Length: 181
Image 1 (spheres, rainbow, N blue to C red):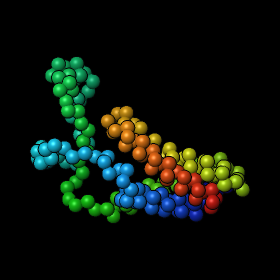
Image 2: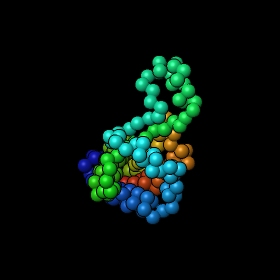
Image 3: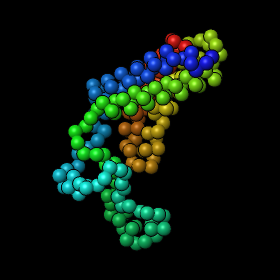
Image 4: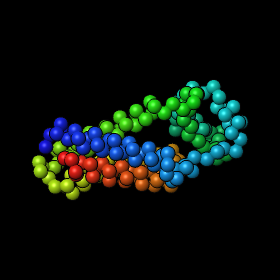
């Protein structure tokens, strides 16, 4: 089986995952409480104003040797500990983000097609193709959240919700590949 012969399931699965993601994030309730409001939003906004877009951490520890210093240890003990992502100011512009998300869906579908083309024999049955493409899609859409929870404090409940999203995308992807491959 050639990856080029899988153009239909690539496109269909990318569209299905994109539509599912849009419905999940805009209409479904399970991500509504993934973020919380800080107590003094204006004070925090004022403190962060002027930061250029990028990633920041509090307290900032430039290297492991700094952890030996008493004042650095005290900062960690006193808290807060935070990982902050700053994006450019302005009203959210959804078009480019939606375009990048669709591009990501296409990339995942192409990777699924690669694995299907390398592991499934021509004429393989629906279930065999479904298992391969669905498993690859689940890994692509869901597993990165685990590292975020381990290293950066992403709540495990949010990661579990991300797994639910990934499962939905994987089922749609596997179904599209099983049907059209």
